[in-house]
Length: 247
Image (tube, rainbow, N blue to C red):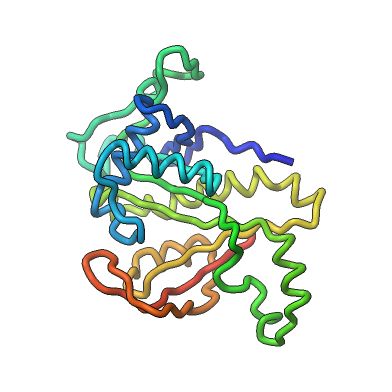
């Protein structure tokens, strides 16, 4: 049974538009590229910033085909005393669709593009078990059965520096998580499937840890890795913190 995810989410200060069209000239690709080509917004991503529109489009296609990524661009609504810089482009709903793609309220003002939030599938399973008590007791058979009933997505977000420090990350992530929880509510009643969201964060990324805690994620533990990785201008790890939450 498929789930229906809204194409637009509204929160008190933000509008989130789901990006789905990967045609080369489509505004969705342009928005994806604007976000993923920004070195500061993607500083904590292992993939790193893209170098061209073509690379961004290929990455967007991989997000959709391999990971069924639920990807939203976030816009800060115009405010009398706005948080982000007023000299940036003000997007409207009409700007994010091509002619012929009819949308209700196409003249609606979305605001300033501040980044993205996404939920992608992780077919390999959870990095750390969401059932730590079973892991501690080595109940592997029960663990495997539970994992088979687990629908797992990974939370990710990338905001431009101009949007840092205003609580937008928490608000945008909460908007997407609430919409996702609503979308899967019927399946939760009809099946044994559990819907779970995981998030990984570097120990030096304290701002993201604060966001995850505000969203209600539980810190599951530390995931050891063999080698350090280059993130945000330095060698990190080896390893990272893992958080999780059922929706």
